[in-house]
Length: 508
Image (cartoon, rainbow, N blue to C red; front, side):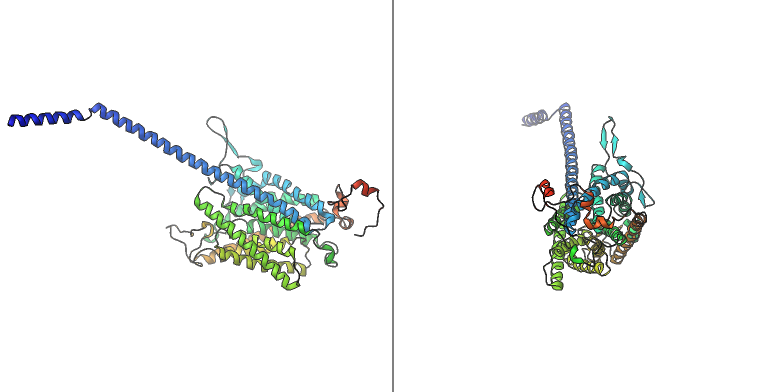
């Protein structure tokens, strides 16, 4: 019996041993598992690289698209300004807008980008990147590769250059409307170059470029998309220009002769600007690589829409109460005023605050517009009221209506989240500092842009290069200097037939 039991145990042990792998087989199995894990690791790395590449491509596509939308705003500026001015200067106004973009592009390429976003010395101004230098590198194989942005948030410095170029030239175009119908075209081209190459870039260096305003009072300024950097700067420069130029001859003696000559162009320009603003504001997220950025862009777009609509209808109704007339031009300027008002705070407000921002912006615009007339300051398109006054309000509203529990939790640049301290907790009690930072920014823009633009226009005035002569102003810049000598063929006839027809006296 014992012998049988022992035999059974030996057989069982032998079977078990036979069923197990030998050491060599175990090593082969472990090696296979290791190779599988290595393959999976490579796949995960490749997936991560692909995801990062796709995110970068999304960001690039987003900024190129939004930059193109902002560039299209020049069509809106051109139409709006042309409609607001007299028909005899229509061609000159259009030419001036085209020259502004062209000259401004060269100014931004030669000096502007470098001063705005180059390596800063003392947080004042950039010092490298002139003429687009430093936009390319060579890899180990000698291939040319684009240089990424300094903060690593975009795949190419050229991408940021393009997007910020659109903002730069838009700011300069604001001045064009203020000085329309009496400034010499070559003179304006000189000023446009100065503004895009030096005046505006220094403001950018102080703010978006990470200069001294970025950390002032420990909280820094807040201007999400440019109520101050772009619009207020343009409004200040434009106001200086129109004051130094003086009013158009007869502007306040015979105001009926200076009414808008083409309401359809004004409305078309307003819609084009409103459309382009969806590149201006949502594009300032500077990214579209994840769900959070998409949600922020949507919030910005919603706030932009609400403020524009609220301010537009508020100005329209206010004007109707004052005059008992429907004023389409006022409605258009009201919409633009709402857009300017929300541009700084569109990323750190909830929708109710955006509506309130637009509503209050209507009174800022109307008060500024009325004050210009009272002071006999001739701004043909009310640009200094729209962009200047509402630019100031936009900066203040950003701090006043910051999204959070009053001033307990300040959000600022953090969007949906609160600004945090070093320990990661939400910062509290900094609302006063935020308002103070905005006030300092307003003063800084007035001091810099106002002083330099005033000196520039005064120098041009005393040299006799600023204003056209009275005869040219009377007959119109188109008749004096353009070919063909008018922008419209109202009769629809062939110009040769019109030239051969009997001439009638023209009263200008």
